[in-house]
Length: 165
Image 1 (cartoon, rainbow, N blue to C red):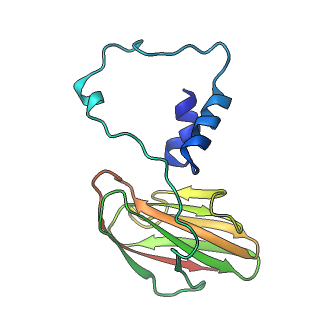
Image 2 (image 1 turned 135 degrees about the horizontal axis):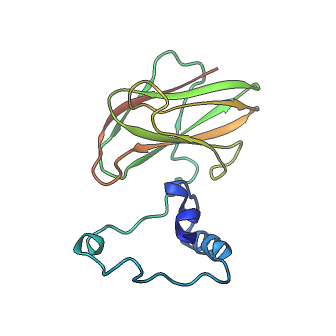
């Protein structure tokens, strides 16, 4: 249970050591391992892919988004599991809308202010169709947006992203 809580349905950001530390903090002293309480290990379980701790690339690997865009920045998820990271600067306080468009089912995460790891919000399908949309009150700062396909194991496709105030 501690692993599920720490992983946060894929929202965890950090290193493997950070994940381990978080799990250790969440384990209750009376919690016991649940190795085979649910039956024998199946072939489906054995063939599952191991999870990966998501990371945000270091500075310099971001696509800069212009605020108050009327036309979305085009992007293409070419490989399953590929993650795109964008950044934008909020020059004044206000309600900003970050949204995707297109037919590709994407998940979007917003980080900041001035932090690549502090999660502000995450969205899957609040936009039109399968598109992500985050509306947030932001202060002047730099913000980071990460976009990936909903199906990280086999999903690919094109999408657009824009930021408006």
